[in-house]
Image (cartoon, rainbow over all chains, first blue to last red; front, side, top):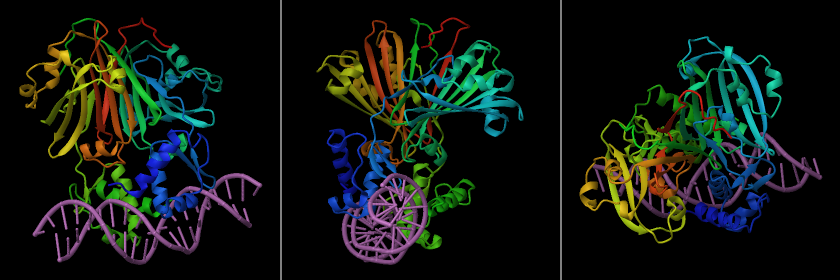
Length: 243
Length: 243
DNA sequence: CAGTGGTCTAGACCACGCG
DNA sequence: GCGTGGTCTAGACCACTGT
């Protein structure tokens, strides 16, 4: 059970976690490491794959393997009324947003509970922190709830969510579904993470008092740094709403 | 970018999803598949690894690769007052519970906010559905809140959570933190899933009205079938508790 | 260009499960 | 014992990155 790749991964992990290999440092080439550990290169690569899955090592084709900088954790706070984009850590994030007009199809129909072909606006938000990606969000809003001054609003790092929240009826309910999985190739590329690093995916549906879905978001967060937090208060007693 | 393993994985995935390969069926041996696709066995194995990560294929050493039966989804409902074990689908689950007396150390001290050495009871719950594992839960309760009739209570499939809930002060708050990751080797073995299948991990801390932690749970659910659901109602207006 | 990782091969040998 | 998957080797060749 103690395969060589695990032994090698353990050794490297210790060196990284103990700081013997500095954050941001480049590891020796795979050929060199393979020689040092006296294994073949595929074996060594599979050891590195384990560390990639843990988010400790990042590979760059043509450049080498690098120890990842420990990054601040991302906390998504559930139950908020404004949109999910504001999972912003305290730190400044650069957020790039691309707005697209489209019409509801397939899963969006079910997600937003609208009729087929219904006009929507999609906001594709990719937030960066420094040079590395941080989160990926697709936000869908019925067209008639989308503000007119699009371009102006999104060119800014400012809180997009607040603007959306301002011009619609008060929310009645927010439903959030959280799941775990491996990212698709495209998502992994967008987030600049390995395909073997788990992602936290959050589906958020906000409904107004009339029961209409005013916003649906699909969020993708890197699993090694993100978690979602939910707090439920039970006023005092009452409400034994258990199944 | 269209590597052979992806092409092979795509082909097999189509055959599985379209039903051309039945659920539960055994795939041809890796050697046969390698011959059919005219690739080497490591390449074919890496293709199967992709499908394992998606939860479509399950490997059994010595027996072969099998198409997994589509299993009913597991929904964890957040914010409940009773313990998390009751994530039971409607279906009957066999739950095996092992109770252990221990004293708070390291992360448990922080988790339950108790002093070091504080007596706790750990319930290690593994629930099965049919012959395959379903969820893994570690529940920690301060010793003095643990019922005396341990053995009797847990030998049953019955709702453990309810019993615990009955004999403690009313809950004031439940905090749930959800994250995604790959399972440790032991966890993967317990859940009988591949190490490359993402898991949803939920940390649940329940506090009573005095602010005391009366229960902390660590749950692990297979990422391909589980999601956590949270509903937040915003009474009407009020409460702009946004950061 | 030289050096890096990415993919793949064609085997070998070991460990497990089942008849 | 035999067939299965699990691990590993010692290369080859391609693709990308930087100088």
